[in-house]
Amino acid sequence: MSSAARTLQSDNECDLSEYRLHRSAAARLVAELCAHAHRDGANSGPWPGMTVDRFIRPTQLRWGDVTSLSIGIVAHAGKVDYAVIGSHEYFHHRVLEASPHQPALLLVLEIDPWLVRSVASSMPNIRQVARTPRGVGEECPVSPLDDDMTDTVVRFLASLPASSDRQVLAPLHLRELVYRVLQREQRARLLHHAAHQAMANPVAPALEYISTHLAEPLTVDVLAAQVCLSASAFSRAFREMTGRPPYQYVKEMRLHRARQLLEAGRHGVADVSRSVGYTSVSHFIKEFRSRFGSTPGDYSDAPMFPGTVAAFPSSLV
Image 1 (spheres, helix red, strand yellow):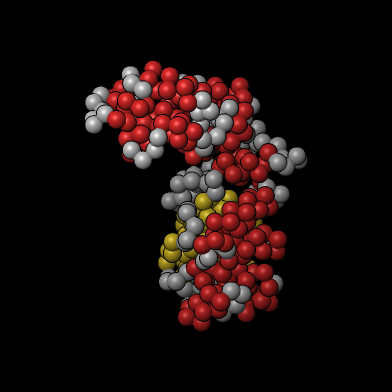
Image 2: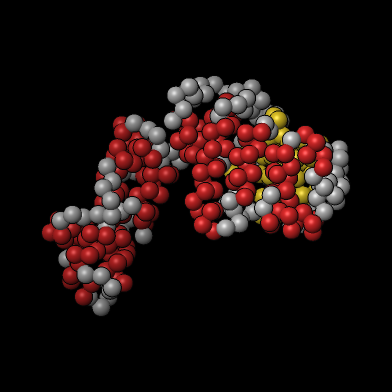
């Protein structure tokens, strides 16, 4: 048990005896949840999309405000269950036993649908769900959280307090949790909800990748790999979402970033060219002049830049 868990267990007086009678993994999980539940009711966690609720009296738990794919974990009365919760899906769970010493604890953890797709694509025995699994659109079914899944959640929670662990270890443990859910009875629900949510913007991870990797080669194959699509399927989806082909979007983003760097006045033309992914300075100068009507050098030397913002597509300004 972590030192933080021991301290907060004393403060909140969480009695773990019921969980120890069943298995030590559940006791460790409750200790970690208590460490993140500083007060009764909802507690925001140190991970995006994470909340821990603590209840000290019997209640009817209702989750109707979950707006994206999530995994919910309920620990009370000596047992631990989990559920896959889809966007705006209704979930309720009756807590018959809860007290200040033995609170009911609920963890809700948002799951990126693209993480599900990435993990599933690396599992050869996993097939995408062709039809809606039973129970979708109704009340969320719950399943027991076994020792392997419990240990995974414990490691994830234990990695959150330290900044370096949160950056390096937490994403690995979260990926492992998705992997373990995909091996169990709620696999079809997780795949279905991930696919349904991803359809809202099937190229979002690729857009994020472009914005953070402009200095690197950005081929269609590289971008398609970010969303687990073939190059042809990705190109069609990308054009539908952005109104232009990937190569055109990447070029506009590079020139837009170059203009911002030149306006800042801290970089020379050659440095800007390299930082936005051009291997040829002359090619960069040619495309910049074609786009903005002046060379990068003239642009950076000008005291003002009239009309350039209006000339750039509004979606990229």
